[in-house]
Each structure stands twice: as C-alpha cells, then as structure tokens.
Image (cartoon, rainbow, N blue to C red; front, side, top):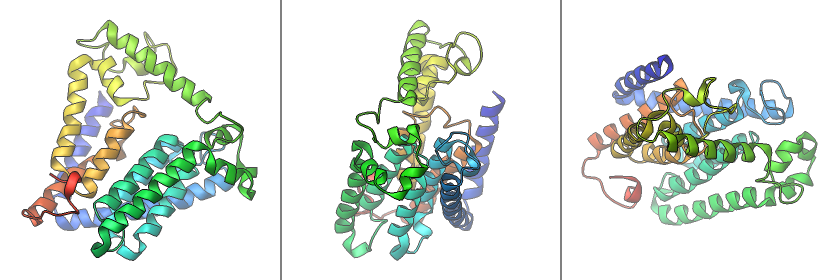
Length: 314
C-alpha cells in the first residue's frame, strides 16, 4: 500500500512538473542521457561482470537485467524528438545493443516494436521520405526480431569472439544449442506462475485474494509473482482490480500522442510479461511523460492531421 501510494504521488507530481513545455523538453534530454549512460554501463557490466544480480546478463546500476533494458527502451522512445534527426537511427541501434546484452527477451520485443512504430509515425529518417523511412525501419525492426527469436543471431554470436562471454543461460536465450531458446528455467517459471494465477483468480474472481497476495508469504506458493500486470490485478483485486488497471492504460492511450503513444503501446505489451510496472518509482515518470507530452502536443497543434499522426494519434 505504501509503495503504490508513493507511486501515485510521484505520478501526479511529475504530470504537474511536465505541464511546462521547457520542463518536458529538459526531461527528454535527461531521458537521452539516461539511455546512453545505461547502454555504456550495460556494455561494461557484460564484458566485466560487476553489478548484475543475474550471472551472464548485463544490468548496470539497476542490478535487474529486465529493469535495465525496460528503462533504456522507454528512455529511447521518450527522448527521440530531442535527438538530431540524422542521428536518430544510430541512437536507436545503440539502445538496441544495450538492451541486447541484458538478454531480456521481452525487452528485445518491445525495442523492436518501438522501432517499427517510431518509423511509422515518421520520427526516424527524413520527414519528406517518412513513408519510405517507415518501410525501411519496419523491415529492419522485424528483421532484427526474426534474427533474435529464430536463433539466427545466436549462430552469428556463437562463431564470434563474444561467445566466450556467454554462459548456458544466455546461450539458450540466443537459441544456441538447438531448440532451447524458449525452453529454459525462466520460460518454465513464467508458465507455471501464469497457470497458478489463473487458478487463484478463478477461486475469487469478484474481489480477488487481496493486495500483495502474490508477493507475500501465505497462499501464494511461488517465489515470484505473476510476471503479468493483468493477471496480477485480477488475482489480487478481482474484476474491479483488473478494470482499474485497464482504465489506467485507457487514460494513457486517450491522453498520449506521437512518441507518448508509442510509449503507451510498449507499456501495454510489457504488461504481459512484467508485474513491476507500477511499483518502480521510475516507471511513474514515463507514465507522466506520456500524458503530459500528449496534452502539450495537442495544445500546440490542435488542428494537425496527416501521415505522421495516423494510427498512433487520436
């Protein structure tokens, strides 16, 4: 309760802070710095394991590889408008490499989706060639995801000097060694807790099992929570809890536009794989950015329509 109250206060506080255009621009510059520093520390942590709590996977100062990669992806999207247009694709690729060495598959996925969506709304490449840029960026993003999830990239890495820095876990995540990419301990664990969450939710579907049920000793028999925000809110809060989280996502969608809406889409997708979306204080900053950025953008361009806005704007 204390954690979530603090998160709500932070969310409101940063929305108020970001309502000033200059403050929002400064925040985007800071997001760019966060992404670049995060990438640099992740590279160091991969080649010289120092900070990560998970052997073989870079995490930098976040200690948790999934958290480190998520915030690089979020920062990449939020910061992109302040990056010079001729450097944006390089910035996105650099962020992708920083995410790659965390070996967080859900972050690989949201990075790829984010790249495709950023290309679609014309934030990558020259404005006059935005449709061509969107196509090329889309092909690039889908191609990279295909390499990652089919094991093609793993085969390239296995025959490179980087192979000496991999362990059995990271090799499996790259698809090295046969069909093991989605048959490791983490995948089995996620399937197990998802099934347990469905069973627990079915027992008390109306009001749930109570706040923190999946994260306190007691009825929940597993070491980890649901790895899924939708299941988390249903198990702990029943249908009202699930509706509350869906309403939050709807508010984000309704009030965001451009890169803010891309960020909202990534949050929606990541909610399928992560149960820590609202109890990390830094997450509230990105939610506040999505809302405030949309409001300021509409205030500045109330009548703007066109290819750049298309499906990702209201």
